[in-house]
Image 1 (cartoon, rainbow over the protein chains, first blue to last red):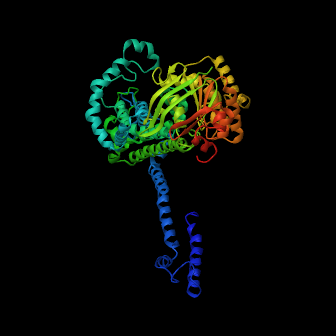
Image 2: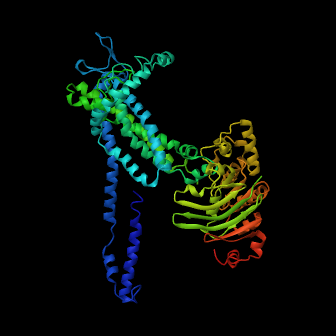
Image 3: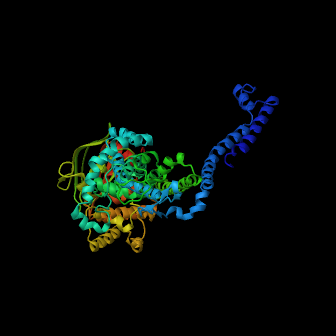
Length: 380
Length: 252
């Protein structure tokens, strides 16, 4: 506020000085004016008077816009908390980890709105697993893309390549979902999953690496191959977060000073050694930040995941199995939630998602900020 | 030991800008050679042509021959190999900020797969002693980041980093222009000691510096080499009018 009001004390005396000068010019010899009369421009400017009032109004209006952001975040948080009070009182923290056992099948039962069972663990699991799969696929691709764009891309290719990368971020989520249903799911089911299943259930490997728990029929790629499921959700998320990670990583790499590249090259580094020694090493904190920012997007992404994840509240190790994510369960069930408890439980899931993504995003922004304008990558 | 440099018909461009025109020059081994001239005259471009750093800029182009020792660096050898033999120190110190002092000094060796710890220790000590920095940093070699040193210390560390790979030629592109007078005189003493072991080419704006450290001096103007002779002759009895005008401060 104080600096916004700065002009006023300056403006006021300068005006009064001008008036004095004006008065004196009427009686004595003209000051600063050849003809002895007030020039048209000077007269006009003097007639404008003190604009402090409108300036203050403008400053206030802008401040209001800025404060609205804080108000919005606070409102969302308060609303989520009051609306989820019912399920919070009923389940407490056990909402996030407990489950019942189905009396007939003896399988764990997490979420059964008809019988009033509401435990959120499978959604947390689904969100985490799809996001992790997405990171595993997207991070190497995005870093590779960023390295190519900043360090080795021919000039004519740079603009179109950046443009199309950014374009990926602009495609609506639901369109990704449609594409996934018609292209990605069949592709996974017919070509990719069978290969993964063959590798992960291969008897020799299973025998050798069975202790990891990732191999065999109950391993990472066991069970029924439907195409839909956690893996498919992860792949579609990977495509969606790729542009975010790639463009931020590119920014961070671009902020590494050229003198660092020259230092490495002058020591006899090849291009790849130079990239590793001078670019990636200096940019690593920022790269971690951009990856976490991508994670934030993956955690909150709803529509595309809801369309391919299978929507069943279960927990299985296999990535081929159906799952559910925090965002997708809200999107799927909110319009059908008839009981107050069901509604309240969904809102509590939303609250948890809200808190997690805010924390993840804040952390990531701080890391990226530290590198692009802070000390670690800067020498001079 | 250093080797001599022979430059023939060297031309260099940045885009359409013809920055070096027909440079002919023979730089003697194990001596310091200074290159002087006004800003933008091409002296930095010239030293960057001696280790093929010039061509790292995508719009840059070079023609002509540069022989370092027996090697024609533009035909017989890859840019990466020549840069391992020709060390370079830049105008502004450019330590690797994420590495310790120790790792900075041996970064060139590690790059080339040199892993013997005991020898690395020895080389780091010798290089830092040669760069007159050992006594100031020996206690926190692996504790302190290379960027935590003062500007003058950073520049001496960069010299140690270039010396660690035992180069045949040491190129210095205005190595003291970003430093205070005390650090500058340390760097000059250093050049004075090093020139018996290495062939040193130093670009400088400071004519007193050229007179103090170099046996030979070349004067560049507008992309051409106007005069190349012993430093004494250049500063006392130059044969070209333009050289005389420059060193007496009539322009530039």
